[in-house]
Every structure is written in structure tokens, then in C-alpha cells.
Length: 196
Image 1 (spheres, one colour):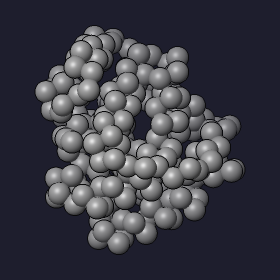
Image 2 (cartoon, rainbow, N blue to C red; image 1 turned 180 degrees about the horizontal axis):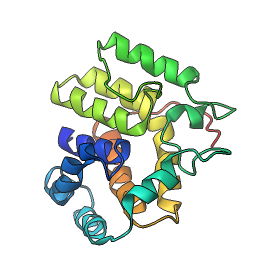
Image 3 (cartoon, helix red, strand yellow; image 1 turned 60 degrees about the vertical axis):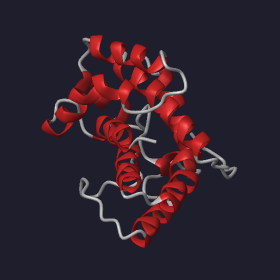
């Protein structure tokens, strides 16, 4: 399990790619294959090459995929509550449960004011911190209760996205990373209904 991989993926999904905050994560993409033991050895280098070769306007793709348009939801909402709430609301019950988890773990997030904490990028950055601190029980709880139950749908929607190649390719790496964590930690996921 690699805290570095979680951090890179989290940063790429949380920060707009044209922001200064995203620069170190974009620069680290080429190192992803060597940062973890990937189950499919050839797959991650392949997707990293796709990510490196893409010439699309990543900032435009980021806005189109993850930012809610004036009417309706974003095509690929990055917040867990949207998937777990029958009305696809932000800051719903699942967000409040995650917020309570963060408080129990004495974690304070530095994020955009007013944005719910259950953004997939923030959750991956939190996962990276917990992995670095070797807090395995907290890692398992974060994954089992708060991230994995809905992230598969996020990955699926991102893989199906037609806006550019960068984020669909990134979703392939994210899906492999999450699957490997679930396998290594022998996580048994609760059955929950998804609404998106």
C-alpha cells in the first residue's frame, strides 16, 4: 500500500490541473508505476503513458466533469454523498458520518470553505496521511465505511466520460489502486444502495 499513490491520485482529483497546487502531482505521474506493487504490472505504465501523452485542456475537462453546471449535477460528482443520498444532495447523512470519523481521528482538513469533506480527492489525501502514520484501523474504517462503498461508481462514471482522455485514464489507475487496497486489507464492504 502506498501513501504516495494515494496522495498523487488525491491531488490530481482535488486540485484543478491549471492550479499551482496541482503541479507537484502532475509532475509525479511518471513515478506512479514504481510506487506500488500493482497486480497488473503492464497496466499502470500504459495508463501513465496515456496520461503523459494527452494534449487535451485538462483544466477544461476538470471543470466539465467535476463542477456542477448551472442546472443539475456534474457528470461525475466527486462527493460521496451525491451517490449515497436518494436526492443526490451534497453534505447529506454520509458526509456527516465521515465528518464524525474525521473528528474521532482528530483530523482537520484544509479545504475550500463550504465544500463537503467527502470529496474523493480529499478522502484520498486523508488516506495517504493515515497510511503514512500507520493507522491501519483508521485506514480500514475510512475505506470500508466511507470511500469504497461509492467510489466504484465514481470510477465507472469517470471511465465512461467522453470529455478528454486524461481523467478516464486516471480512473483506470484509481480503480486498480482501490481494488488492491480492498484485497490486501481483506475489506468486506457493506451493502449500500447508490442513487447515482
